[in-house]
Amino acid sequence: MSQAAKESTRQPRSTGIRDRGVTIDRDAGLYTHVVAPLRRYIPVTWFDWQPHMTRPKSWWPDLFLVMGLVLSTVLLMGPDSILAKWDMEIRVWSFDHKIEWLRELSIEVTSLGSGRFIAPIVLIPAVWAALRARSIRPLLMYVLCYIPLSLILASKHIFGRPLSQYVFPLQEHYPDGAPLFEYSDVGGGGIIEGATAYPSGHAANAIVWYALLVMLIGGLLKRWMVWTILVAPAVLVISTQTYAGRHWLFDAPAGIMMGLLIIRAARRVPWHTVPLGPLEVFEPATRKTILYATLLISGLLLTAVMPLYPGIAWASSIIILSFTWLIVEHRKARRKAREAALSED
Image (cartoon, rainbow, N blue to C red; front, side, top):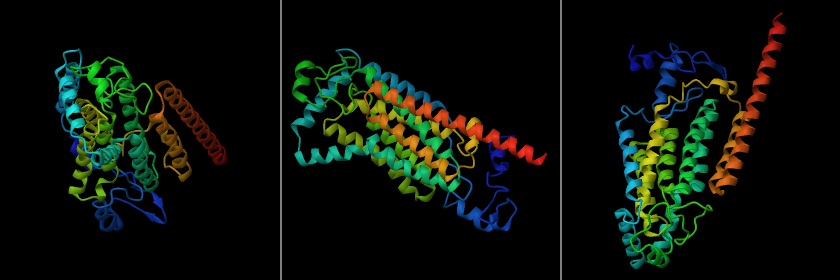
């Protein structure tokens, strides 16, 4: 049987669930005349949730993205890097043609790609979807998209490309452009201690977080709104961060390609049906469960503004706390099962 045929015969998770005095069934008139039509406009119904956007049909784009990422990295290595030279020329041009009010505006617009700004905003519809669906699946999707972004932050410590804020010291030290693996702070210091310019985390954020937002609420939006959310932030972030001197231009393609790889991987997962394994103990999710999960996720988001090693330590403590909670819930479930068995006897 083909994948499409299997999906067409798959029962929704809402089948047979009784809540609020209503039983939804595939053959019920309520389902046929009320729930099914609403699914076209409201993807998060009382009991069912599934992300907007379709599953990618081919792995070829992913392969090309990986090749492009490797090529971009190689071309930025060494003192004779042509991309580093072009970056320096573009940076000097933007400085020479600086308009102060436009630069200040560009700095503000660049925050659209800041994880500190957009991640908490996207968490709100993720929590809404979890509450409406009584499921941790939307929050699980959120977390598993966030983790690779954290790995991008770690890579900024590895590639060691100087930042682009201070033009004249950069020209003095790197007249032919600032390549990778220099580990110099001559170009300025970032918000996060020790983090360097390559790849652009803002560009990756502008891809992943806004695509994740579409996956959560895209079914409520018109098509032009969806495309605006997907495209506009990335274009604005890349152009403004380059003009404001917050990033080299060729830091952005690597961030974009990493972001596209992350979100394409996320789109391949059938989040609404994927087996949860040990996490099944949280289903159906109560408001208390969703509150605890949200607090843990909020704690995890703090790692984005921490230096590398304190961030790793903090993230490890959040993970340990999460596993502790999972173990406690499993023990509660086993105890309830034993009590139920004894009551039947």
